[in-house]
Image (cartoon, rainbow, N blue to C red; front, side, top):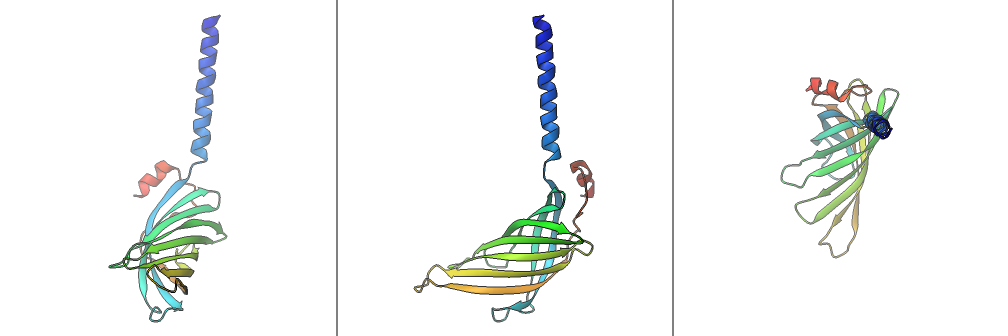
Length: 175
């Protein structure tokens, strides 16, 4: 009798463990890949910025259904990295992201802001605008500078499989 209870208990625990593992796997975030975009500024409150280009490198993960995450950076020559992260939603054929951003310049300036990005699912190009506050830590006035920048994004790296329902094993085949 004791042996039967022990076997039933072990079987129940095994079944429970497998059920929990399946639930966790089904609810996990799927990394879709890393790519780059060339950003071109076409509007700015900062003098000399219109026409400037830079490269955004980032990774996109699918949280589930139409929900996504983005983590990325820009590494300007001779300055601190510009870090970008946030979340988005795929509505129709457009992936909308709201991203926070920060940069610790190599001088005394510190920047922070919010960026709105729209990426076309097919071309994976799009548009962005950025609203930010910049602060000079050595300024005697302790005042913030405000900025606005807008532009276009052109896919420069490998496309991301947006909207795909890929298992992690299938993603390995994409590399």
